[in-house]
Image (tube, rainbow, N blue to C red):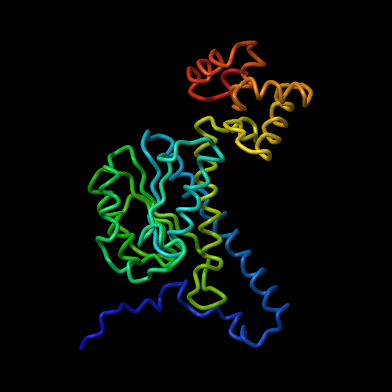
Length: 294
């Protein structure tokens, strides 16, 4: 019977790392240090891809639709994680950044590697989203060859969405844009949850942080679109208001409570001497950008 599996030995993430061939013989301290040092390559890879990452962010900013991550295994989990962190960090709508993983939410805890070989595997979930030309779909696959991801990108492209691939391998892709993170071989051969995963997580953090900064969710380096829903966020909100309004902590707390714990509204209420409702109207008129109001 003819073998059906593809030889992926030429892909960098599948190759043997020349500096870690004796990994199993190291002491615990030596192993920890080696793995930590090797992860420096993840930072370098992301820095080298910064212009390519910026192109993707500009596409998301310039479109009115959604940013949709699709991936399998570690790549899929990282996409779901980044999407889940956007609402509490930026008070973003949960439908603005969406993470889809092969096998569904169950795959966040239990691996389902076989799913990634199905080219049409992502189609059902993507069709539910009714993709259009204002959406951006980012396929995430460290090794670059995952059929589930490429199939999803193919469908998204046919629907008019802007499509991109985030990968740590040099591979062909029939999409609109490729972000290549050149992390090289893994210290544990083929284990892309290591520095490839680290570089991927960092890149996703950068994409969404830059995106939400560009659309007014950030003022200076403060996350001003913050809803104080617990003690930690209440404290953070108070300190942001203190700094941006130059008032005491007690005054900032009272202002935050009057704004229904909406930091951005509280700041505008103080600077414009308006009610909460008036502040919200001003914020809306400014497209959410405090820079236009302060």
